[in-house]
Image 1: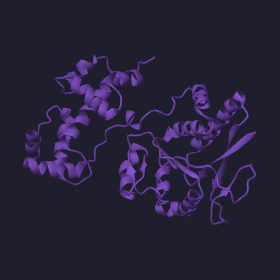
Image 2 (image 1 turned 135 degrees about the horizontal axis):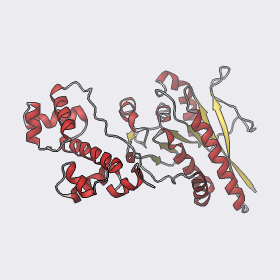
Image 3 (image 1 turned 90 degrees about the horizontal axis):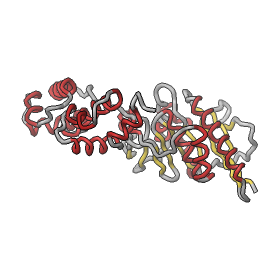
Image 4 (image 1 turned 60 degrees about the vertical axis):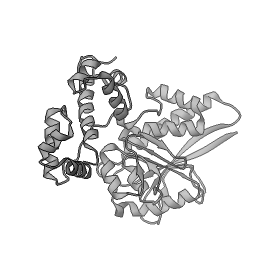
Length: 324
């Protein structure tokens, strides 16, 4: 007996069509592998596209699959968007409908900027979610009640799933294949597409982009100096002298302006430089540690793994321009 599992893809203004069609292809490939493996209870993923329709008060399905209008899909996917995320006004049309679908048992899943549409449903209070790291500040300001973790590439919270980067639709798609068709079919699909299974983290790819628009000239002066010197001198006394502030005042204003302590900020500047040297250079890791300001290579390795999520060696093997 074959089970049909409906996966709905929401088409909203500015949606990234490459992700929409890519997900359709990914699920078609997964269905092919599931069919080959057979068994008494074979599941298949049916794709339904939902779009705004001027004659109705909710999105309508725009696909050749016939279903009862009262039924709800197993999952509704909110793809990434091109350009800025949907405004509150744009998202209002979909938000109430999505919340109703969720109450009826539908899992909601977002990719990249699709998390802004998910946020407008009001379902993210106290829930852990991710979005593209470049959208993290805007997301926090718009949805302060959500627990954003932009280091994670994919967060599966059961009835709500979120993925970070624009290409993370592959991770989300494979996660759903794993959920509904099983890990064997998921691995078959990933192997066929030559993509990694969904175990990556977004912080592997993010670039430290400090806030320079906070309006505190003393802290901005320190930030510019740290960037120019690679944060090799990260003593609180030196930073306070650069800022012309007392140390306690510097700590308070630096944290308020950047969201980080001076030490954490300096470590991220150093690790960012280390990533560049690992990706484009040939220096040994111990030499890189010294180059970015760590006299103890083991300390560099520990800080690097905490911030990036990979060891320096793993990062070089994965991202070196001369790998392979």
